Length: 166
Image (cartoon, rainbow, N blue to C red):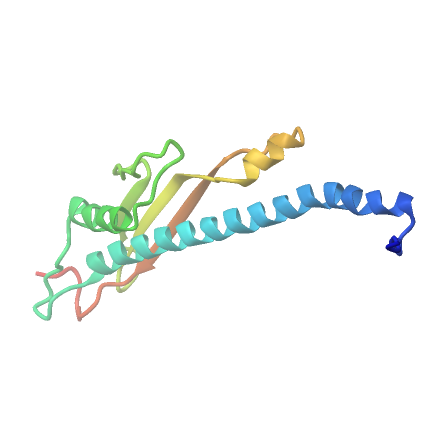
């Protein structure tokens, strides 16, 4: 006759493992979702910062003759827009981010400095968080799923001994 093996844990402790898992799994899921969402936000912020840096670099770059390569607002905006399109950055509705002069994109020179400085700024770019708001709603939370990011880069003109270039 086979001997029946008995569990080392008493019968009432067997269910405690399931109960502990039920209590800790939602917290673990929120931590994983938060880590993924924050990581994606940092990546999107880095793309925006690099896009503004590329625009400022294009605006500040000048040839050895002293003539700027990209002097128009539209020329710089198109470089920044191409950078964002290259990384397929999307807004909160899922559409590609479109830069509009004076609204979410500015390119301006400050001639109060010597040499003057230029700035390229991306402001209020909506980015949608993917996971954390959905998990937060399971617990009755009201976490917003849209975050607005900003990026600004300032530079001085390159290769210029005098300004403005002739």
